Length: 366
Figure: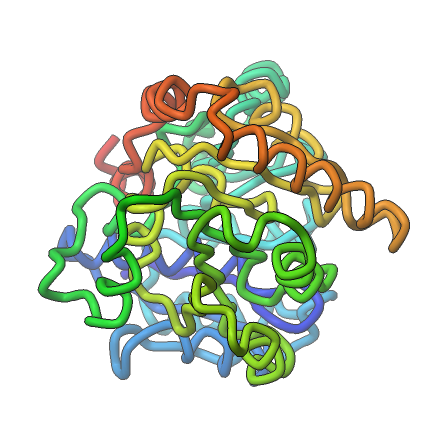
């Protein structure tokens, strides 16, 4: 049994649980059972909306997601009862004290983005493109986890836990007819826009208005993804009434299909950038949180992506970012920059099989 400890809510959105679901499915494909441990009912609801019924067991700890030290006792009881071999933890709320208690029970893996300190874990995972330059080798050279096992480092984009569809594409027969028909015209460019599952910083409406009120509207077919946790999605849909070249995609379960058929993307920074790279999709992206700053530097320096700015810095800066996005899209659509060269560059960065590699590390196979 492999355990996974992660949360999702209106504050931290769904990124942690979504990447953990990819890892959980990879673990299951290798023949091992998985149990999720979440703090509260809000996490249970959001996690449950992203997995199929009875796909994984989910245990609600009934604790404060912002105070993980307080959950040690109930979590340890669950780990012992369920004979968990390895626990994967994905949260920014962890402390050294938290891991000191857990490492006496089972192997611990930590999915890290920030490198705040060296934790006593068996497996340390950071799949960002810049992770090899964050000092992990030195920080963890003398660190051990459960059973005095030396910490194993899983670093770099080869460990990016993308969904199976990004390395084993879903057939067109399994894709809905409306999505397929939206790509029937190949005489023009197709542009994909996604602001993430919860649309942090409320960029979706601004981007739609940018398209409608500018010269962009009739220059391409626009594919707008409305995330599962976007506020008032019906109102968002109403914005594009009468716009025949703007397509709304809701409850998207095959993002790889959209990415593989679009020519350009506009994305919020996050795991989606790695998904775009796996599909070779040239991307304009923006930052929504401070913890993305290193990710922004890496992808901004790549030949296949353009950083438009940080929308978390206030409304005025959002307008600057929108101007940058509009200008760059026009350059791409007018052919002033080589989309094929950008695509080829991105495809060389990752193969998308990171979830399988992480699963094997958790199962002690590497």
